[in-house]
Image (cartoon, rainbow, N blue to C red; front, side, top):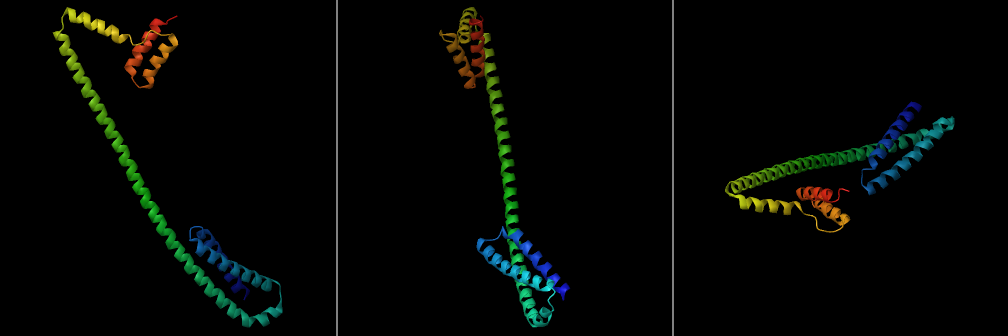
Length: 202
């Protein structure tokens, strides 16, 4: 008799702990119903434990009639709890499948985005290299046509291009050159900083 009660207590406790761990995922109204049922079961189990371990012989005589009814009620309730746990398991499994599908879609999107970025960078580099080769072709053609007077003009233009800084204080000149860096105009920034160093080398 005690072994049977001990087995039932272990089963109830197992169901109780399993339900608690899965209960955080279930709907709120189901959780409240289950918790109330578990509290009732826990009270009944505590009462049974007190009677079994108190050594009361009268319990065996008087409670034999009631035990069968109580065990049947416990069995029914345990089956109900097991069914609810199965329902919760299917509910959890559905969400796990949905989460896995969302993770796969997210990974696909991230892969596609990185591929698009790589393709954009390749296209940008190709366009830049094409424009550089076109500029070089045009500049070579101009050099072959130029004469001495145009060479002097190009030297003057180069000097004007090399002089980017305005005639202001050294702090303002440095700020002006630094603004080219901020604007990502690296060639102009390089020329302006060299000019700043040449002018303010002291």
